[in-house]
Image (tube, rainbow, N blue to C red; front, side, top):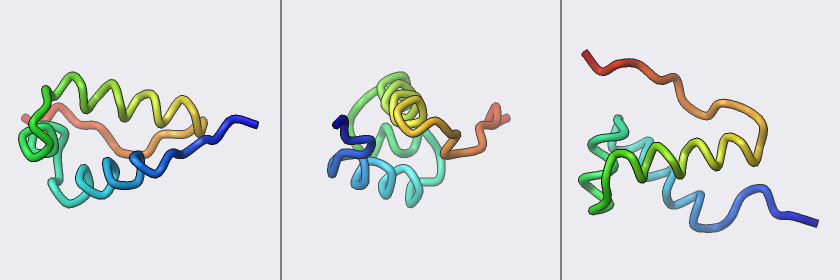
Length: 58
């Protein structure tokens, strides 16, 4: 049976939530915004639902 959520996903999601935006989370994690977005999209695909409301940030 495939695990939907990995332990590292919880830390990632906590950082994303406390940072308040994908770009702020990326800076905090030392990765690109694209990498954060991809990880989030992969998590959402595994569990079958959206985890955050995305806005343009403008």
